[in-house]
Structure formats: structure tokens, C-alpha cells
Image 1 (cartoon, helix red, strand yellow):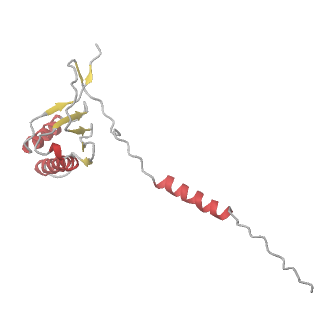
Image 2 (image 1 turned 180 degrees about the vertical axis):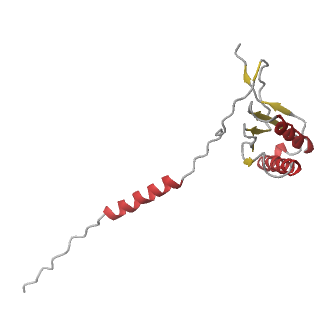
Image 3 (image 1 turned 60 degrees about the horizontal axis):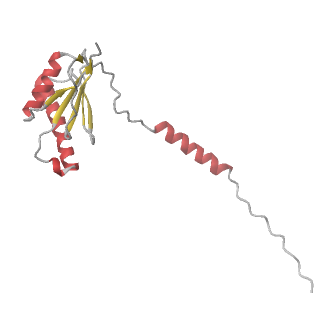
Length: 158
């Protein structure tokens, strides 16, 4: 008895479409990715002769740009976009107080050992920032009952 041999088709996997899809996904993710730059605000800090001390453990940095925009940030949070032109002075101060209070709340939530302690506020104000905006910021901080404020400066190299 003679058996006929059935020709088996060779199984092959075409990888070209798969590679195309992977490259398209890679390009999509590269284009849609945002990069978080911590210090993206261009600041020119004033100079001072005094020595900078080591910042305390529980700090919140507040940056005032030359356009009077305020950014409140800590290690865990960042609130930005508080402009100097929106709303009345009372509304801006209230908005600023709320942002600082939210940053303090998030810090205490992430580290329960900090609860009940008052944070140190470090203000980084550009030379060109308006004096009124910095005073408004200090007023908002004092309304929260925080009395430890430091100003960031660049050491004078004279």
C-alpha cells in the first residue's frame, strides 16, 4: 500500500506589521509625554552677604516670578499659575492662602510626624517681582498662622 505524503505548509510569522505598530506606539508616547522640570521658572535672585543656613525639614518653597506669578511647591506637591492680574487683592490672597494650606495638608498627610508642626516658608522672589506681590504673599502666610519665613538669595561674591 502506497501512502501519499501530504505536503505541509511551512508556518511563518511575518513580523513587519508588528514592528510597524510598535514603532507607531513608541512615536505616539514620545510625542505625548510631558517632562516635569522642577525649576522651570527663570529667576534672578537678589544678592546678600549673609550666610545661607541649612533649611529645616518641613519646608514649603514659594516662588514669585518677575511677572508676579506665584508657584507653591513642596517635595510632594506643586501648585502654580497664581497670576498677579486675576481677581481682587482679597481674592488673590485667599487663593494663595488656600494653595499654601493644601500644600501643608499634603505634607502632613504624607508624613504624620509633621502634624502639628509649623512649616518654614522659603520665598524665592525674582529681583523684578513687585514689592506689593511679595507683601501680599507674606500677608497670606501670616493669616495661616505661620511665622517662620526665609528669603532665598544668591551669595554676594565681592
